[in-house]
Length: 224
Image (cartoon, rainbow, N blue to C red):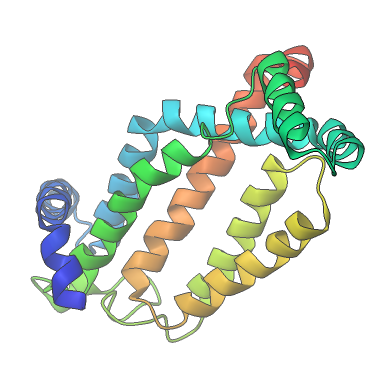
């Protein structure tokens, strides 16, 4: 199974490893031998390139959450009339300027990158022990022995979700708790280099979301 997905994402893996190698040439020349720095730089680069998609995703999620009260009323009113329920729901989306699929597209675009990063770092052959180490991590191909990154992955995932969420139903509240715990749990077994990528990605997205709403101002934020 691992070999199948590795072959499937081989072009992306190759590109990511090339970029990592280029960043490593720069950072190692500056005296920073660890591959942790190239991973962080590559993550920042990916988030900058995909920033327009992030904007669409966050705005779509916010808009969907803000029309939840109206959706509940429509669902209750037309629960016995599926055709009218579908029609009124479509009208609500159009009037609010909401596309339910808009929030999925960025995830679909970023998922191959995430999978590519996983296989790019899976059993990655570092040029030296110093390149494989990063601060407290002895080898970024192995899980974090101190569990610091798994904890950070759960915390940053929770914070990133909380920044996006406004109106939440019971299911969304459960997901907001379960998802960070799940991410933290699987991070216990993942290569620490991949978890470093995930944590950095969350931190950059948190900064991007803060900047997005800061620059738009409260009026624009309410109009989303």
